[in-house]
Image (cartoon, rainbow, N blue to C red; front, side):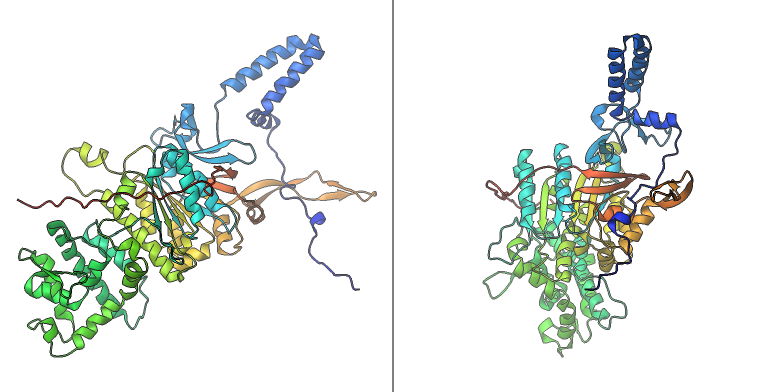
Length: 599
């Protein structure tokens, strides 16, 4: 048998990672750095031992021990990032921008510990509102770490929103177990989009029940995906967008004026040509009556002209449509065909939300009110069906949630300019000590255009976003180069085990940058065949994070980057088990909003 030839270095031939680096700091600097660790206690033990065995040294060792003790006790404590708030000490890593003096410790978000020194990793509320990216391949522990980090907002008396892109109900069980520890079972809401089995258990959600016309339009348009350049049917897509932009102001006016709720069925019925023509020509609002051959007719003679005029414009722009005739008395079928091309763009959406997921979205007042979730800091878990649907359908389901959150954030920005400052600015709905946290797990499945703006504005709205994804190509395939803008808004990077050695590796290494180190240059051999290190050392530039360090991480381990610092960390682990006991979904009693009429 011919022996296999191996040209690459074997394990025993490779130099241990980091073995060639040399510490060239002065001896005193290395000593003081070591005394900041638990080694200072061992030094005192050694001094005490010498005094016991050689009593004559007491006159020397006692003053040294007192000096060392005073120095250790009075030294300023430092942690890799921020000091916890309960320490009530000045934090040298959190400076006042006007004076560059240390601010009082404000760490309220606990991430874990430094794997090398065992020091705790804390972040202030201000640092949390700068958002975090959590890249990691399958099995790196992203979801488990996210579940543990959810204990932070719960300990603040706050809540969070989790979008689980994997579609695993065990995540819901673990979240429920975590909330039970804090006595917050009644704050848990669930949007379970899994429909593969006959069991359909979920809280209801009507994203169109609240919000203005622009917000509702954006939710629907987001389902169409990004426009394709040189699309031969682009004119029909534009007409579909125009149709929704025409409908939503009228629907919102009827909701606010006459109490007609907006849901997916209302919108679907409103896209029919007879609905448009009846409102535009006769000022009659049609309401679908299930089980009845004819819809309910509501005269609206007081409908504003700026709401009605877009209907007349839309119908007038339909090829072949004569606005002087009834919709069913047109001279040719071309107007109906042209309108049908526009509504076809929403057929898939209406089928998905009104049929497949009708048990969730076909409601007037859902259990889940996104504004209530964010402002009252409740807990919402969204389970996306990753294996049931195509990537485009899955992305559409995720986008409706993201669009709902974005609509709430837009309302919180505030539009009022006149009045007492205490009412305009200080009492904004998003104010508070701790940020409301959003956990986007498996973000590549549902990333959408505009998320970068959510992160940019989230800081001022007291929101923190955690972005969990497997690799950078997955994000760029969904939103293109806007993925870099999205990640550029996350100042904290908690990188777990990674395998993509292409774009993800390049992004991590460029973010960490390169540093100069002192490194041994060679080994010298002797006649006995052994080798020892040469006495020379050189200054070389190396990557701060070698790719092999990321590949060798185990579950829960990470490399954390923030503010120019790189820490090899161990993520905090909350040992929760949601697979035992009884779990019940909260069932709120939803009431219609009171109808306020003028006069």
